[in-house]
Amino acid sequence: MSASMLDLDAARRQSLEALIEAWLTRRGAGGDGPLEVVEVEMLAPGRPGLLDVVARAQGRMAHLVVGLHEPGGEVRMLGGAEDGLLGAYTDEGGAAVAVDALFDADLAPLVVTAIVGEPVAVVSVAADDERATVLDAEDRLSFSVFPWLTEGPHPGIDMLVSLDEAGFNHLAAPVALWRRRGRDLGVVQELLTEAADGWAVARTSLRDLYGARVAPEVAGGDFADEARSLGTMAARLHLGAERAFGRRSGAVADWARGAEAAVDRLAPSLGRSVAFRRAVAALAPREDRAPMVRTHGDLHLGRTARANQGWVVADWLPGGVDADGDPRYRSPLWDVGTMLWSFGHVATAALEERDQALRPGLESSAEAWVARNRRAFLAGYLATPGIAELLPAERELVEPLIEALELEVAAGKAEGPPGR
Image (cartoon, rainbow, N blue to C red; front, side, top):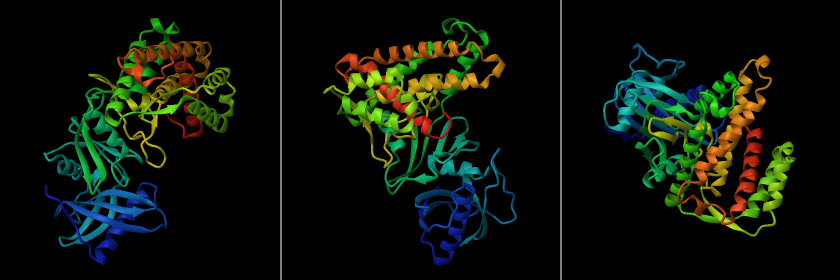
């Protein structure tokens, strides 16, 4: 399909603004703030038609794909989708019924076709949240469309593409980038075959353990081999990040003091941990510097998947950036600390799923599972060839640094919204 940018007259711009307001309301982002249409690209002319719209709204850059149907025709939404009607629209083709095209059974395949450049017939909605609407196309492609844009490349896409080019293959390979005027609108990736969410894989292991009430190493769903493979994958991620983005260095004492300040501010009860205070005391007086790379930013079990080809990073949207969107270089042990935190988090969540009458005695099983898989993850991580070059030269600093950074992660998670 050919695409062209539209020059809107005042009436058409006003009509489009009403559709954008309806879209914002559907996404829970409606309000009385200023609204400005930035650009409109015609992805497909006529009826059915497609308009890709970028607008400034509520202080952010909104992105929506408007589908146009003939009035009176049937509008079919994808399974599970709510009503996607946005309103009426008129252009040179006459009156039209406007819908959110990503949720329209007839138009969503046309959107994917327009970006991929080859016919796509069957599409379903795999996910939809503030970060992306994700379409599954014919069980072979995953198409993520961003409802909110950044000025310049999306940090997650920048990281995904750069690591793929640097040879890190533990990911769903990018097939096509949807980019216009320097902004990333979406990305098409290979769909991972028979992939299982890392959180779900770990939780299955824990359910087997809690049901059997045996040691984790003899439970049917022992997770240790998977944890070790996860550690290897994480190390390869950091080595790939060094190849893609280079390395910097930072002061170990600064990281320790930063962790102490964050924990004391966000979760003082965690800061009273003897292990944490011992770790900070061991690190704070040091003058050592250690390598920093661009980290994933939130590398926990829920952002990974177990596919046929092994463990992969399934979610790049944190993008390794800070709150202002600038690339964040840190010790790779921040990502390690996040993953270790998630082992304890999933063990607790799986325990809380069980009937309260069945929980007594399982706390020790949860602790044993966490300890076993922490050891396995770290064994896989630290044994990966080359990773030692990205860690403090003095190896006795590694353990207390992981302890401090993991507690900093835990404090931040305690402050944030519930979930994985």
